[in-house]
Length: 98
Image (cartoon, rainbow, N blue to C red; front, side, top):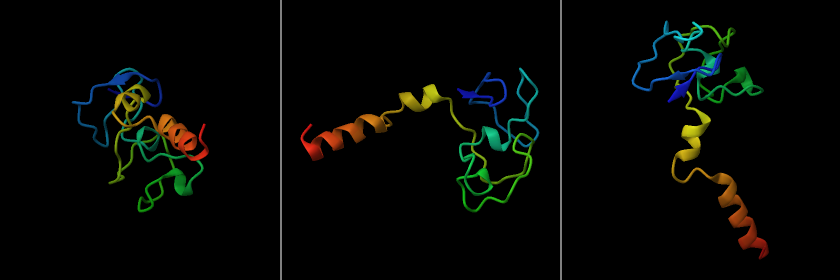
């Protein structure tokens, strides 16, 4: 499941997200920077995609070609091989004999 960055409501992954798609719960635009996996406040243009054009309204609908709906935290945690903390601890212990 995806989730709306505005209200947190679940969005079905089977629903295509177009420029004018809105959240059924709060009517916020879904094709917006705050719902994109590349949204990264503090980076240049608040975006981790270096080729993306600047978007001023991060919550408004946009035409960004690099938009990818971000997943929920729970989805990201259940993917195999994504426990970076454990692998980092294991590497540290291996290096320093902990």
